[in-house]
Every structure is written in C-alpha cells, then in structure tokens.
Length: 184
Image 1 (cartoon, rainbow, N blue to C red):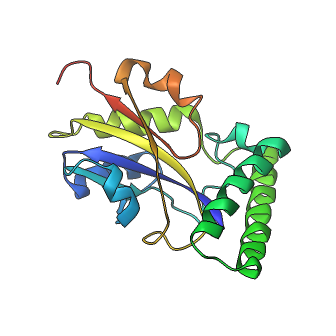
Image 2 (cartoon, rainbow, N blue to C red):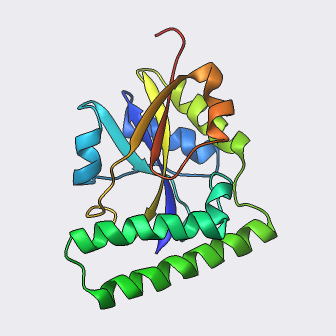
C-alpha cells in the first residue's frame, strides 16, 4: 500500500481548511477513522491532504528509506497484523505491497520529492491563521488497508507554532506533530 499525509485540526470549518490547503496545492478531505478517533480530542477533525495517488516519496519520510529502518518497521507491522488474525498469505501480500511502495518512494525521492518542508510549514501556518482554529498538526502513516479501517495509534507531540518548522524535519511515521499558537 502507500504513505498518506493527513492533518488534524482543532476548530475551524472544513470548507475554510480546504481553501487553505488548496492554496498550497493540496486538499482537505474529511476522513473518519475509528482507531484514530480514540487518540483525538472530541473537537479535533482529521483530513486527508493527498491530491494524487499517494504521498510515497514525501520529504517528510527521508529516514524511512534506510533498509534497516524499513525492515524494523515491517517487523512491527507484521506483529500487529498477526495479532489481528491476518493469515500468512495476507501478510506476505502486505509485505510485497509495502516493498513496492518503498520502491516508489525511493524513485520519487530520486526524481525530487513531491513536496517540501516549507510547503508543510506553510500549510500548518495557513490553517492556524483560519478564524476559530486553535491548533493544527500533521500525521504521516503507511496505510495497509482502507482509510476508515486502518489501525492508527499515533504518538502525539505538541510544539509551539514557532518551533513547528524545525520539529517537522524530524517527524516520524505515526507521530502526530501538533502546532499550537503561542497565544490563543
């Protein structure tokens, strides 16, 4: 399957958030995921930002391309899938799909990443500037199934909006990096 970048926003309305993302060449499509909902606050909303097929090759995941790290992450995912009751055949297909996505991501990096740190920083700054938005963050996740059914257990990290750009350069898969305005 593939990497996808989504945002989590507290406050604001979906239309204004979508307008802000479209100004940056992305979109904000509301997304409901039961497991992620458990990790979000009641007034936070989740939006898919992808405009193409996927976000494989994103600049947000350069550390994910080392073979050692890929193998380690695959092993963790396989353990979760076994726990969920997936068959060996289904897990093998998942591994093949993941390796194909990693290859696509590496090819995309070699051709130039489809995005930049500045793009994602601007996205968050533009969303936070929307009337009523109290905070906004980015989540990078490798989906192995449907958006709505995927098990996502993000590690939440809140930083001031002033520190967001620096922290974004070290975002990890399944880390929800939230930018909080310095004065609300």
